Image: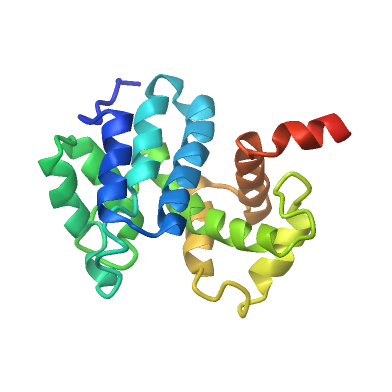
Length: 200
């Protein structure tokens, strides 16, 4: 597979994220999706791990400033990313994850774009579920617990379950497989990973 150029270094991308996002939650979400994308890149496209990571980091760049206009989410981001030197490939990849809201945006085609589409909302659901656990950790979280939260539409009601289902279909995975893989991805960079490993 060809090497992809984001046109912007990771440090500069993170600075850009912080300029347009003041809420720590949004910055943390960007970092969570970045690390999730890097995890999957190591399996599917290792030479482009950095590119996958920047896609994840900047995927919601414009959300905080334009959350009142969800249809044009990522349209505003395209201008910001281009002005910062980001490549057309980076912009396209980011815009695909909002194609369900805006049909004028490109739909996911590359594995990277499908993974972003499938996991972006799901990482939010997992994060919300983990906070409710006594351990506050993803390390002892499992598919069974996630399925319960997924079926309860009142829990994390802002998470679009249909997007997650569609993402699984794009990847050719059953929901359980998507759940298991995404939990494993988040466990791979959990801050308390070493603590849990030592306790086992």
